[in-house]
Length: 404
Image (cartoon, rainbow, N blue to C red; front, side):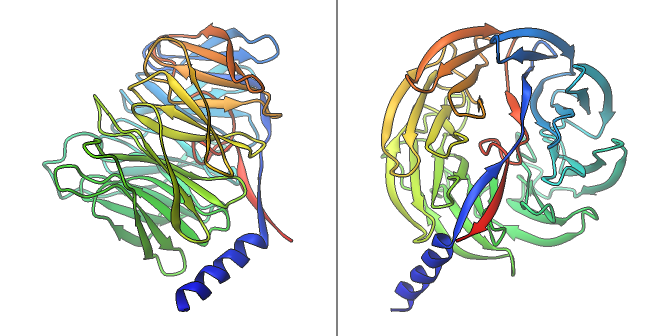
């Protein structure tokens, strides 16, 4: 009876709120080319490259400011962040922040930029207006046997009050207060936390835990209460017999009702294909489907109707899914290479643009026919394509809640 009442309360909260994403869409589309050390500018009216500017070593991930005036690109092969004027298309500066900057991320209110690093457990806070360094958070990881990245993806609560950063080696997530970077909580996991997803109302954070094949630990979602920073529930993700496991990304649909979780599998062979749809009110898996090898990112269309699953290193097939029912609608081949990874959409959801890193190109997709209509060469290792502000890769803007 208590469980039924708890589900009813959660369902009433969800029913009383609608989540809508507000985001300005830039006049241009921006594509970092990691191996070319450039960023390409695409005119979506003509679907052609109109110019390039310089970035730095292995500039893979980027973020636009909410006012669409500046772009920050992490030079993951070096020690700096590239700052680009998104209006004049000029490289402004390179800011040294630490060993292997991963993903500069701007707060939803546009005031600050947080830079994490794969080569050390370090996060640097910049003033988004002046680009001056304000604060630094750093810890020395205990597990020196760790191989690979020490941090992965940061995230902010939608009210810009807190940031989440990882310590991969020690399987910890730190909750940092903005702008002091004071640690307000440390959250331990049974495996590294790959992605942290705050709920649209900022009351919970759903943490994607990778799992561990050797230790027989399933990938899972750890649901954290933001009032206490304690885990209130853990949802294990079922995978196929023999399927390699490594939980990658997850995301709430724009109506806040469903959460899609992708099991990518570990590189370089990947092999993960399971996608789980979780009913947020019931906190229960209601559907699983099989995606392409290395399915990793569940992108959301701005109209909220679809989730588009992209593979991160093992296939060129993207999958269109109904965001409400979780039913597979269509598989589409994007170019020839096997690293699709990233997508953006036009504001009206009529066109999509997907990068294929192996091809060094962007592919234009007609969203009505769900067919590729054009390829646009950009540069070697075309990476995270952007055209709007993102706190999380897959969400085109900032959640805002409205009471019914």
